[in-house]
Amino acid sequence: MNLEDYNLKTLLLAAIKSEVESKRVYEDLANRVKNALLKERLLFLAGEEDKHRAFLEALYRQKFPDEEIVLPEKTPVPLPEVDASEDRLLSEIIEDAMKAELAAKDFYESLKDLLKDENNRKMLQILANMEQGHYDILAKELENLKTFENYDEYWPMMHVGP
Image (cartoon, rainbow, N blue to C red; front, top):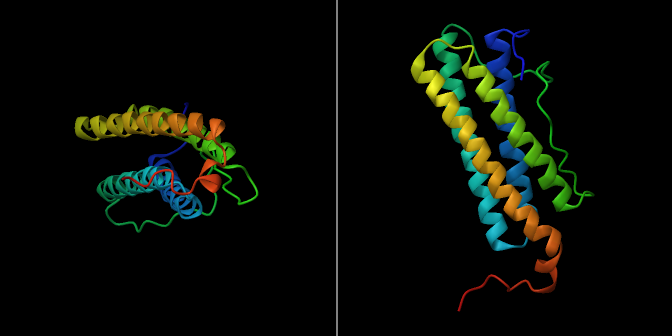
């Protein structure tokens, strides 16, 4: 992803906003699904996004110590948004989330190249790797959803153990 047209402040605010929105999407989805395992995975992803936000906020404060973090309503950085409206199939939302996770991976790898501090560069690469891991989790869940889009409605006790 080419980020050279943006300043670091804009990029960090876009990243923080993206993590906040991703957390909200995963929490909202977790509250809507009945499948206990899927709910657990979505809450895990929400927690991961919150950790990413915390790191990015710390990085922002390091780079801009005298400036308050004020997230823009709309960001000029082309990061995909996930439409998690209730009228969409869960599989469609997961597909959008997968695209967003890959875009986030690409974004962090590109952002890393704009920084000089080796520790921050390594941390951004770790975030990129984690976004790939989120994609992989979602890909597996999508596979299950496409096979059993509404199976938890028919067998709500499917994941209750002995």
